[in-house]
Image 1: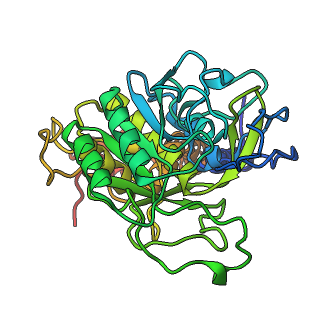
Image 2: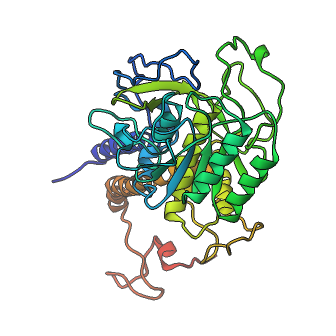
Image 3: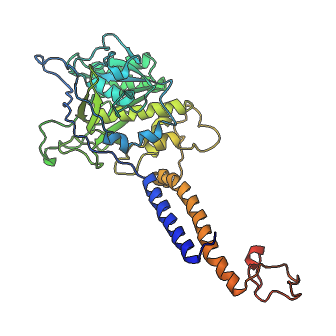
Length: 421
């Protein structure tokens, strides 16, 4: 079959446009907005309020937070297998369908009247269920349920400190703490120090959850530290919304280490298979704890401090760096071996321009395709024109052509790797 130069050009142009469109699609992700109205999660119940009965409404679309965190791209590389995450909160329901078989409770923490601790545990590691596209970050991680409050969600420093100690003693490698207290205590510092000694990463909400009465940005309290998030060795977490901003009227601090989705996020309840919607830094801490479980499952040689460093340095650049589980899990450590355990000065070095790396990976196949297309277009346009002009392949210097003479046009000398000036 004979192809004219114009036809070759048209075919090549069409393929170029197709490849370019494919490249753009490979580097982006989207999810349809859900029209399901979900009940709002409570973080504390009054004495006369009934326990959470569970939700009958199910979120069937991919939540924005999963898209933002690129979880579907992360799961082929890590699942959290072999890592236990302690959830210091209102308890975690051991009968929650998405966590069934993976919850171990300290004392009576296997029940959850409020539902907040179960919600956080679901963000850490809820499994995918039929007809539902919501899932936790580390779906194979085990959950250690620990009470950091009374049964109805009232928190004290003593209860939180006891909860951290119980999680460490129970074998957790990552502990997420939902409480953000206005003052530090010796008991909290001692519990955090114990976690560091046992190589356990403590992740904590950097601020209390946003007050439900906040109506404008002017309602935000002055920036200050909260505990245990502000204690040395704790990875403190702020919450952001779908646009990467803090919620209106949110508490603020200048000491947060990392940010994660926490405003209007989907999660599970203590009963039934339905979902709730909730907001707050305590929920963002659950996402970071799940990401820490992924990192510790694929990089067991890293210490707790090095895991925290990797999560921070691989995060998306912002005023408060935003969590990027995919970058954290797939980053290549500098050197042949991980830094020695206990070396606080060791850093995890990442390639430059980390935020663009996933897009570059997506564009590689398209780039290869473009190269092939360009070659096809060249063959269809350049070679026929060369034949009409009498172009001939280059020959070694001094070699005669068909007529016994030197080639009149020294075309192709570049292919020899040298040129004459």
